[in-house]
Each structure stands twice: as C-alpha cells, then as structure tokens.
Figure 1 (cartoon, rainbow, N blue to C red):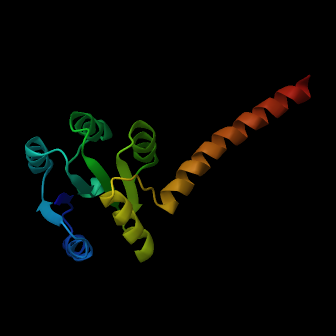
Figure 2 (spheres, one colour; figure 1 turned 90 degrees about the vertical axis):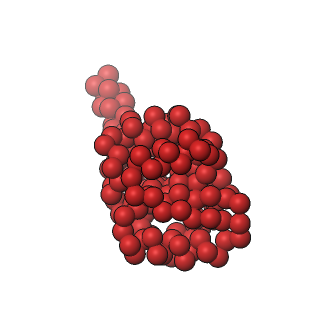
Figure 3 (cartoon, rainbow, N blue to C red; figure 1 turned 45 degrees about the vertical axis):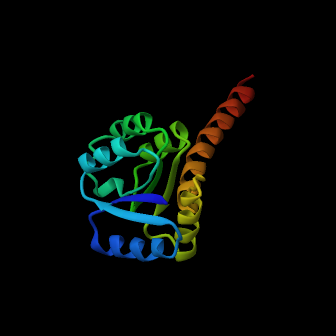
Length: 155
C-alpha cells in the first residue's frame, strides 16, 4: 500500500486529488494541514509520497524544504502549486532528484501523467516548468555567446 500525504489547504484541490487517487489500486491518501504534522508522519514512515502546495504551506524557506528532503531521502515529493518562484524551481530541479513539479493550472492529461509518474517514483516536471528552466538556461548561454562574439570582434 502506497501512502500519499497531501498538504494543501484548498478544499477543491483536496477533493480533486482524492478523486484522482481513488482510481489507483493500493493507495491511501491522508490530508495534513501543517508542516509539523508532515514531519511527524515522516518520522513514522519516510517511504511515502508527499503532495505539497508549497505556496500555501507553512514552509518559511526553500532551504527548510531541502533540509526536510535530506532528512527523509526515501520520500517522493510532488510540488503541486499555482505558481512557484524561479529560484525555488532552480533549487528543487538542480539540487534534488526525488521532486516532481506540476502546476495546478496544467491540462488534465498533464496532471494525470504527473501523478502516474510520481506514484511510480519517477521524476516528472511539467512543460511550463521545463520551458521556464530552459529559457533561463538558454538566456545564460545566449549571453555567453554574445560575450564571446563581442570579444572576437574586438580582436
């Protein structure tokens, strides 16, 4: 039985994910309200799946979430939020391997695909986040190329 811990205080999200996870065999969903409850549950069993709306949670910093991830390395995470900062996206994407990311406003099929990959312990990053990260990275590459071209022209 796979245990899913949901930390999201929006009623509609709780109901929607309860309905989606009900279609999975051997899945038990527990709704939590606070970070403290999450930590207590992880102490009892860290081999769980955590769905977290980081934006609406009581986590104060990204570092706090990353420390919790280091403390419980067997936990799989799905960040399921409306919006996440670029700094958070970069830190989660580049410093972890067990975090999936999907936005609440993604299309139905993308959310279902994210849940499927997440519940299979595979990392999933939605298209919007992938594009954001790629554009950030390409911007740095482009700036680097422009710099090199300027240096070559000066010679």
